Amino acid sequence: MKIRILNSYVLSINIYYYVTFSLSILFVGITTYAAEVENLKHHEEKHLKNIRQLSFGGENAEAYFSSDGEKLIFQSTRNGNQADQIYTMNLDGSGVRMVSTGKGRCTCSYFLPNGKIIFSSTHHYDSEPPQLPDPSKGYVWPIYPSYDVFVADENGNNLKRLTYSWGYDAEATVSPLGDKIVFTSIRDGDLDIFTINTDRSNLKKLTHSLGYEGGAFFSPNGDKIVYRAYQPKTIEKKEDFKRLLTQNLIRMSNLQIFIMDSDGRNKKQLTNNGVVNFCPFFTPDGKKIIFSSNMSDPKGRNFDLFLINIDGRGLERVTYNKEFDAFPMFSPDGKKLVWASNRNSKVRGETNIFIADWVD
Image (cartoon, rainbow, N blue to C red):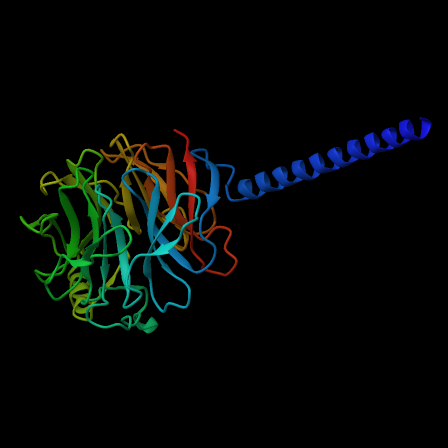
């Protein structure tokens, strides 16, 4: 009897220490995870909570929500690909699936409200991707003339071409109403913004200034469009723009944020700071714009996210990380923000996708 009591006592002690040890390990694990998540956030980033990293390695950017807020579509150079291809994934980073052809170079993907996808690609002209610009030309963006806009099912099947003109057709996004696509095209000899119905009818040119206008997104109710623009003012800069455009290149040293009605009227410039501002997106209430800018870095190398009212006032900084932060998009319900960042990179310059709960 004493032996049984002793054995029971020893067993109880062992269970006690086992449970205590297990709970301590669990607590350390939870604490470590919390610390890891917290390390992704700068203490001044008050609008961001519970930051999660969704991609790990390679070049990943321009992640955008589906209309139901359940999936993301993004472009990535990974798995031995020489250039960006288009992928979809779940909001926790699982279920990654390539939905482009794996050929050529792709960019600017987006979901339609009906679940289909659009993106631009060069695969129909050449299975090999076009080459990146010569570094000796400085910081320039390539405007590949073989880009066309395509539409496909969510899984990439039933791929169909939407644009047919030779020259750059890219940067396409879709109205929340699902009736119109806005994109940038060089079809008239300059880089301007156009809209077209999803059935390819009613092509309309919205911008007419010399320079580059692009990266356009509709407001939540579809009545306005926000975009970025480089409009050279001096004779020297105008000639430089024209010269580079003949080489399918543009130089972005002064890129500003504009807003206009969805029919192209009532254009208004929101920023005028002489630096690079790009990838603007409306807040869910349509009253503000979130965008990326290097205005806070005297050297112009680091980009952070900022908010500004649609009247051009009330500028507020959102991210304070010392690395690149750009391509923001709110979830349809406004509860989450997804963006691309160099934070927590394992290799210098590596860009990954991050998601966070949004705090007003």
